[in-house]
Every structure is written in structure tokens, then in C-alpha cells.
Image 1: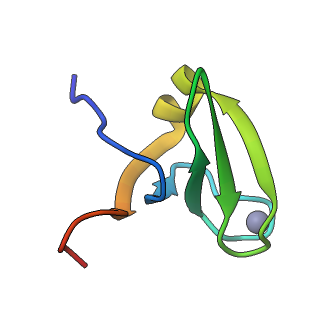
Image 2: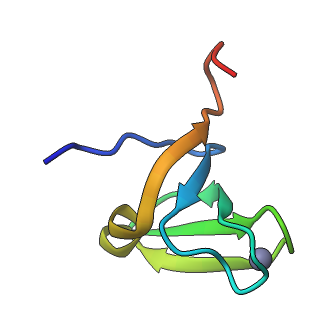
Image 3: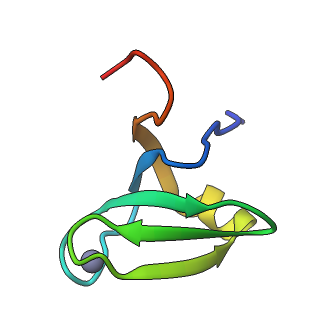
Length: 68
Ligand SMILES: [Zn+2]
């Protein structure tokens, strides 16, 4: 199974879209739980890391890399 790599500030794509229709979330806090903010409606939610890793599809934009 592929290990998911992500860090603070990354914009990630979720498997399920937010109720507002956006499925891009920005990681705004990392810890035991991860706080993500919807890039569509700016609503933020706190999710357990295991749940986040399960629901996260991929990193769309990394916070600190030269890749766009
Ligand atoms: Zn939203």
C-alpha cells in the first residue's frame, strides 16, 4: 500500500467532495488530528489522521516545492 506524504500548507484532493461541491482542502494544522480548510467555502474541519489519510486522494499543490 502506498504511503501518503503530505505536509502543512499542502492543498489536497479528497475522495469525497465537501457539501459545497469543492474537493480541494488545504492542510492548516497537523498533529494527532489534522485540520483542513475547504478552498471553496473556507469551512475548516478537524479529522483524525487515519481518517484523513483514508479520505485523501492526492496532493494537488505542495506547500514547499518548486512543483506547480
Ligand atoms: Zn466547502
